[in-house]
Image (tube, rainbow, N blue to C red; front, side):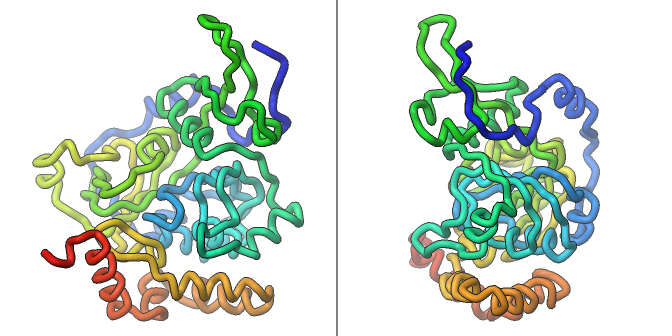
Length: 330
Protein backbone atom coordinates (compact mmCIF):
# COMPACT_ATOMS: atom_id res chain seq x y z
CA UNK A 1 0.00 0.00 0.00
CA UNK A 2 1.18 3.54 -0.80
CA UNK A 3 0.11 6.75 0.92
CA UNK A 4 -1.31 8.21 -2.31
CA UNK A 5 -5.08 8.68 -2.16
CA UNK A 6 -7.71 10.76 -3.87
CA UNK A 7 -9.14 13.73 -2.01
CA UNK A 8 -12.80 12.95 -2.64
CA UNK A 9 -15.34 11.82 -0.07
CA UNK A 10 -16.55 8.25 0.11
CA UNK A 11 -20.34 8.46 0.13
CA UNK A 12 -20.99 4.74 0.65
CA UNK A 13 -19.02 2.40 2.88
CA UNK A 14 -17.31 -0.47 1.04
CA UNK A 15 -17.51 -2.65 4.18
CA UNK A 16 -18.80 -5.97 2.87
CA UNK A 17 -19.58 -8.20 5.84
CA UNK A 18 -22.66 -6.22 6.90
CA UNK A 19 -23.82 -6.11 3.28
CA UNK A 20 -23.30 -9.85 2.84
CA UNK A 21 -25.48 -10.39 5.91
CA UNK A 22 -28.10 -7.99 4.52
CA UNK A 23 -28.28 -9.88 1.24
CA UNK A 24 -28.32 -13.20 3.08
CA UNK A 25 -31.50 -12.09 4.86
CA UNK A 26 -33.20 -10.77 1.71
CA UNK A 27 -36.33 -12.87 0.96
CA UNK A 28 -36.06 -15.33 -1.91
CA UNK A 29 -39.68 -16.42 -1.92
CA UNK A 30 -41.38 -16.54 -5.33
CA UNK A 31 -43.97 -13.88 -4.55
CA UNK A 32 -45.57 -11.37 -6.89
CA UNK A 33 -43.82 -7.98 -6.68
CA UNK A 34 -46.18 -6.06 -8.96
CA UNK A 35 -46.98 -2.53 -7.87
CA UNK A 36 -47.44 0.93 -9.31
CA UNK A 37 -44.57 3.38 -9.69
CA UNK A 38 -46.12 5.49 -6.94
CA UNK A 39 -46.22 2.51 -4.56
CA UNK A 40 -42.70 1.31 -5.41
CA UNK A 41 -41.02 4.71 -4.97
CA UNK A 42 -42.95 5.41 -1.79
CA UNK A 43 -41.94 2.08 -0.27
CA UNK A 44 -38.36 1.70 -1.43
CA UNK A 45 -36.88 5.19 -2.01
CA UNK A 46 -36.29 7.12 1.20
CA UNK A 47 -34.98 10.65 1.71
CA UNK A 48 -31.22 10.53 2.15
CA UNK A 49 -30.79 7.27 0.21
CA UNK A 50 -27.98 6.70 -2.28
CA UNK A 51 -29.42 6.01 -5.73
CA UNK A 52 -28.05 3.99 -8.65
CA UNK A 53 -29.75 4.20 -12.04
CA UNK A 54 -29.56 1.70 -14.89
CA UNK A 55 -29.17 2.31 -18.60
CA UNK A 56 -26.50 4.14 -20.54
CA UNK A 57 -26.69 7.72 -21.76
CA UNK A 58 -30.27 8.12 -22.95
CA UNK A 59 -30.64 4.39 -23.59
CA UNK A 60 -33.04 2.38 -21.39
CA UNK A 61 -33.19 4.87 -18.53
CA UNK A 62 -36.00 4.36 -15.95
CA UNK A 63 -37.74 7.66 -16.73
CA UNK A 64 -41.13 6.72 -15.28
CA UNK A 65 -39.55 5.81 -11.94
CA UNK A 66 -37.42 8.97 -11.90
CA UNK A 67 -40.48 11.12 -12.55
CA UNK A 68 -42.12 9.51 -9.54
CA UNK A 69 -39.06 10.24 -7.39
CA UNK A 70 -39.40 13.91 -8.37
CA UNK A 71 -43.20 13.91 -8.03
CA UNK A 72 -42.91 12.57 -4.48
CA UNK A 73 -40.31 15.27 -3.76
CA UNK A 74 -37.65 12.87 -2.52
CA UNK A 75 -34.62 14.83 -1.38
CA UNK A 76 -31.07 14.66 -0.02
CA UNK A 77 -30.33 11.71 -2.28
CA UNK A 78 -26.86 10.54 -3.27
CA UNK A 79 -26.45 9.58 -6.92
CA UNK A 80 -24.09 7.49 -9.02
CA UNK A 81 -23.56 9.53 -12.18
CA UNK A 82 -22.52 6.67 -14.43
CA UNK A 83 -23.24 7.88 -17.99
CA UNK A 84 -26.07 9.99 -16.57
CA UNK A 85 -27.80 12.23 -19.12
CA UNK A 86 -31.56 12.81 -19.05
CA UNK A 87 -31.80 10.86 -15.79
CA UNK A 88 -29.48 13.40 -14.16
CA UNK A 89 -31.48 16.21 -15.74
CA UNK A 90 -34.70 14.89 -14.18
CA UNK A 91 -33.26 14.49 -10.69
CA UNK A 92 -31.75 17.97 -10.75
CA UNK A 93 -35.07 19.38 -11.95
CA UNK A 94 -36.63 18.07 -8.75
CA UNK A 95 -33.70 19.19 -6.57
CA UNK A 96 -33.51 15.58 -5.41
CA UNK A 97 -29.75 15.06 -5.05
CA UNK A 98 -27.08 16.72 -2.93
CA UNK A 99 -24.06 14.49 -3.61
CA UNK A 100 -22.86 12.69 -6.69
CA UNK A 101 -20.15 10.25 -7.73
CA UNK A 102 -19.48 11.72 -11.17
CA UNK A 103 -18.24 9.92 -14.23
CA UNK A 104 -20.40 11.38 -17.00
CA UNK A 105 -22.89 14.02 -15.86
CA UNK A 106 -24.31 17.38 -17.05
CA UNK A 107 -23.90 16.50 -20.75
CA UNK A 108 -26.63 14.93 -22.87
CA UNK A 109 -24.02 13.61 -25.28
CA UNK A 110 -24.22 15.24 -28.74
CA UNK A 111 -27.41 17.06 -27.75
CA UNK A 112 -25.61 19.57 -25.53
CA UNK A 113 -25.25 20.43 -21.84
CA UNK A 114 -27.94 20.50 -19.18
CA UNK A 115 -27.70 24.06 -17.92
CA UNK A 116 -29.69 23.31 -14.76
CA UNK A 117 -27.36 20.44 -13.86
CA UNK A 118 -24.35 22.66 -14.58
CA UNK A 119 -25.74 25.38 -12.31
CA UNK A 120 -26.35 22.82 -9.54
CA UNK A 121 -22.72 21.72 -9.57
CA UNK A 122 -21.20 25.17 -10.03
CA UNK A 123 -23.22 26.59 -7.13
CA UNK A 124 -22.03 23.81 -4.84
CA UNK A 125 -25.58 22.56 -4.31
CA UNK A 126 -24.36 19.09 -5.32
CA UNK A 127 -21.14 17.80 -3.80
CA UNK A 128 -19.10 16.04 -6.49
CA UNK A 129 -16.51 13.27 -6.38
CA UNK A 130 -14.92 12.28 -9.68
CA UNK A 131 -14.50 8.82 -11.23
CA UNK A 132 -14.11 7.37 -14.69
CA UNK A 133 -17.00 5.41 -16.21
CA UNK A 134 -14.94 2.25 -15.84
CA UNK A 135 -14.21 3.01 -12.18
CA UNK A 136 -17.90 3.37 -11.31
CA UNK A 137 -18.77 0.19 -13.21
CA UNK A 138 -16.02 -1.71 -11.38
CA UNK A 139 -17.21 -0.32 -8.06
CA UNK A 140 -20.55 -1.99 -8.75
CA UNK A 141 -18.73 -5.15 -9.76
CA UNK A 142 -16.72 -5.25 -6.52
CA UNK A 143 -19.97 -4.90 -4.57
CA UNK A 144 -21.63 -7.62 -6.63
CA UNK A 145 -18.64 -9.89 -5.95
CA UNK A 146 -18.83 -9.19 -2.21
CA UNK A 147 -15.32 -7.74 -1.99
CA UNK A 148 -14.36 -4.27 -0.66
CA UNK A 149 -12.43 -3.07 -3.72
CA UNK A 150 -11.06 -4.00 -7.12
CA UNK A 151 -7.53 -3.23 -8.36
CA UNK A 152 -7.52 -1.38 -11.70
CA UNK A 153 -5.33 0.84 -13.85
CA UNK A 154 -8.03 3.42 -14.50
CA UNK A 155 -7.44 7.08 -13.53
CA UNK A 156 -3.78 6.64 -12.47
CA UNK A 157 -1.76 9.78 -13.12
CA UNK A 158 -4.84 11.93 -13.76
CA UNK A 159 -6.70 14.73 -12.01
CA UNK A 160 -9.70 12.39 -11.99
CA UNK A 161 -7.80 10.16 -9.57
CA UNK A 162 -6.89 13.19 -7.45
CA UNK A 163 -10.56 14.19 -7.09
CA UNK A 164 -11.79 10.63 -6.56
CA UNK A 165 -11.82 8.55 -3.38
CA UNK A 166 -9.59 5.86 -4.89
CA UNK A 167 -6.27 4.82 -3.39
CA UNK A 168 -3.04 3.78 -5.02
CA UNK A 169 -1.78 0.33 -4.09
CA UNK A 170 1.14 -1.88 -5.06
CA UNK A 171 0.39 -5.30 -6.52
CA UNK A 172 1.84 -7.88 -4.08
CA UNK A 173 2.76 -10.19 -6.98
CA UNK A 174 4.33 -7.84 -9.54
CA UNK A 175 5.00 -4.55 -7.74
CA UNK A 176 2.81 -2.75 -10.28
CA UNK A 177 1.10 0.50 -9.25
CA UNK A 178 -2.68 0.10 -9.29
CA UNK A 179 -5.74 2.11 -8.33
CA UNK A 180 -8.00 0.47 -5.74
CA UNK A 181 -11.62 1.45 -6.38
CA UNK A 182 -14.00 0.79 -3.45
CA UNK A 183 -17.15 -1.30 -3.67
CA UNK A 184 -20.33 0.73 -4.21
CA UNK A 185 -23.52 -0.51 -2.52
CA UNK A 186 -26.43 1.81 -3.45
CA UNK A 187 -29.41 1.87 -1.12
CA UNK A 188 -31.70 1.52 -4.12
CA UNK A 189 -31.35 0.87 -7.85
CA UNK A 190 -33.88 1.90 -10.49
CA UNK A 191 -33.62 -0.14 -13.69
CA UNK A 192 -35.78 -0.27 -16.84
CA UNK A 193 -35.96 -3.49 -18.86
CA UNK A 194 -37.78 -4.78 -21.91
CA UNK A 195 -39.44 -7.79 -20.23
CA UNK A 196 -40.00 -9.13 -16.73
CA UNK A 197 -42.29 -11.57 -14.95
CA UNK A 198 -44.27 -10.77 -11.81
CA UNK A 199 -41.49 -12.14 -9.59
CA UNK A 200 -38.79 -9.87 -11.04
CA UNK A 201 -36.93 -12.11 -13.47
CA UNK A 202 -35.79 -9.65 -16.15
CA UNK A 203 -34.72 -9.87 -19.77
CA UNK A 204 -32.71 -7.05 -21.36
CA UNK A 205 -32.15 -6.53 -25.08
CA UNK A 206 -29.13 -4.60 -26.26
CA UNK A 207 -26.37 -3.21 -24.11
CA UNK A 208 -26.61 -4.10 -20.40
CA UNK A 209 -23.80 -1.74 -19.32
CA UNK A 210 -23.35 -2.16 -15.54
CA UNK A 211 -26.97 -3.08 -14.79
CA UNK A 212 -26.31 -6.74 -14.03
CA UNK A 213 -23.78 -5.78 -11.35
CA UNK A 214 -25.89 -2.84 -10.16
CA UNK A 215 -28.83 -5.15 -9.49
CA UNK A 216 -26.60 -7.37 -7.35
CA UNK A 217 -24.91 -4.46 -5.58
CA UNK A 218 -27.97 -2.46 -4.50
CA UNK A 219 -29.83 -3.16 -1.27
CA UNK A 220 -33.18 -2.63 -2.94
CA UNK A 221 -34.02 -2.90 -6.66
CA UNK A 222 -37.06 -1.41 -8.37
CA UNK A 223 -37.56 -2.53 -11.96
CA UNK A 224 -39.87 -1.02 -14.55
CA UNK A 225 -40.66 -3.09 -17.60
CA UNK A 226 -42.08 -2.56 -21.06
CA UNK A 227 -43.85 -5.90 -20.96
CA UNK A 228 -45.00 -8.32 -18.29
CA UNK A 229 -44.43 -11.89 -19.46
CA UNK A 230 -45.31 -15.26 -18.01
CA UNK A 231 -42.83 -17.07 -15.77
CA UNK A 232 -43.12 -20.04 -18.13
CA UNK A 233 -41.56 -17.88 -20.84
CA UNK A 234 -38.71 -16.98 -18.47
CA UNK A 235 -38.12 -20.62 -17.63
CA UNK A 236 -38.25 -21.60 -21.29
CA UNK A 237 -35.30 -19.27 -22.06
CA UNK A 238 -33.28 -19.12 -18.84
CA UNK A 239 -30.19 -17.86 -20.66
CA UNK A 240 -31.99 -14.56 -21.32
CA UNK A 241 -32.48 -13.74 -17.64
CA UNK A 242 -30.14 -10.81 -16.97
CA UNK A 243 -31.49 -9.97 -13.50
CA UNK A 244 -32.92 -12.80 -11.36
CA UNK A 245 -35.99 -12.41 -9.19
CA UNK A 246 -34.14 -12.62 -5.88
CA UNK A 247 -32.41 -9.30 -6.58
CA UNK A 248 -35.67 -7.46 -7.25
CA UNK A 249 -38.02 -5.85 -4.72
CA UNK A 250 -40.64 -4.30 -7.00
CA UNK A 251 -41.85 -4.71 -10.58
CA UNK A 252 -43.62 -1.79 -12.25
CA UNK A 253 -45.26 -2.44 -15.61
CA UNK A 254 -44.89 0.76 -17.60
CA UNK A 255 -45.12 0.74 -21.37
CA UNK A 256 -42.77 3.37 -22.83
CA UNK A 257 -41.20 3.74 -19.38
CA UNK A 258 -37.85 4.83 -20.86
CA UNK A 259 -39.29 7.70 -22.94
CA UNK A 260 -37.99 10.15 -24.13
CA UNK A 261 -34.87 7.99 -24.22
CA UNK A 262 -34.25 5.05 -26.51
CA UNK A 263 -35.16 1.46 -25.61
CA UNK A 264 -33.54 -1.09 -27.93
CA UNK A 265 -36.06 -2.88 -30.11
CA UNK A 266 -38.96 -0.84 -28.71
CA UNK A 267 -38.69 2.85 -29.63
CA UNK A 268 -36.16 5.49 -30.62
CA UNK A 269 -35.39 8.54 -28.51
CA UNK A 270 -37.63 11.57 -28.92
CA UNK A 271 -35.01 14.10 -29.96
CA UNK A 272 -37.63 16.83 -30.34
CA UNK A 273 -38.77 16.49 -26.73
CA UNK A 274 -35.23 16.20 -25.37
CA UNK A 275 -34.45 19.46 -27.17
CA UNK A 276 -37.47 21.05 -25.47
CA UNK A 277 -35.96 20.13 -22.09
CA UNK A 278 -32.63 21.70 -23.03
CA UNK A 279 -34.24 24.86 -24.41
CA UNK A 280 -36.43 25.29 -21.32
CA UNK A 281 -33.32 25.19 -19.10
CA UNK A 282 -31.98 28.41 -20.59
CA UNK A 283 -34.26 30.42 -18.29
CA UNK A 284 -34.76 29.25 -14.66
CA UNK A 285 -38.32 30.65 -14.44
CA UNK A 286 -39.31 29.08 -17.74
CA UNK A 287 -37.75 25.82 -16.64
CA UNK A 288 -39.68 25.84 -13.37
CA UNK A 289 -42.94 26.17 -15.34
CA UNK A 290 -41.82 23.47 -17.76
CA UNK A 291 -41.07 20.97 -14.96
CA UNK A 292 -44.35 21.89 -13.26
CA UNK A 293 -46.32 21.05 -16.40
CA UNK A 294 -44.34 17.93 -17.35
CA UNK A 295 -43.95 16.19 -13.96
CA UNK A 296 -45.67 17.84 -10.99
CA UNK A 297 -48.74 18.81 -12.99
CA UNK A 298 -49.59 15.29 -14.16
CA UNK A 299 -50.73 12.41 -11.94
CA UNK A 300 -48.58 9.69 -13.51
CA UNK A 301 -46.34 8.75 -16.40
CA UNK A 302 -49.21 7.82 -18.73
CA UNK A 303 -50.48 11.39 -18.41
CA UNK A 304 -46.95 12.67 -19.20
CA UNK A 305 -46.91 10.51 -22.33
CA UNK A 306 -50.33 11.82 -23.38
CA UNK A 307 -49.04 15.36 -22.92
CA UNK A 308 -46.24 14.68 -25.41
CA UNK A 309 -48.05 12.98 -28.26
CA UNK A 310 -49.28 9.81 -26.62
CA UNK A 311 -49.62 6.58 -28.56
CA UNK A 312 -49.40 8.34 -31.92
CA UNK A 313 -45.96 9.75 -31.11
CA UNK A 314 -44.76 6.50 -29.57
CA UNK A 315 -45.74 4.54 -32.68
CA UNK A 316 -43.70 6.98 -34.76
CA UNK A 317 -40.68 6.45 -32.50
CA UNK A 318 -41.23 2.69 -32.57
CA UNK A 319 -41.24 2.70 -36.37
CA UNK A 320 -38.02 4.73 -36.34
CA UNK A 321 -36.36 2.28 -33.93
CA UNK A 322 -37.43 -0.76 -35.97
CA UNK A 323 -36.13 0.88 -39.15
CA UNK A 324 -32.78 1.70 -37.51
CA UNK A 325 -32.45 -1.84 -36.15
CA UNK A 326 -33.31 -3.41 -39.52
CA UNK A 327 -36.50 -5.00 -38.21
CA UNK A 328 -38.75 -2.61 -40.06
CA UNK A 329 -38.35 -4.60 -43.27
CA UNK A 330 -39.40 -7.86 -41.63
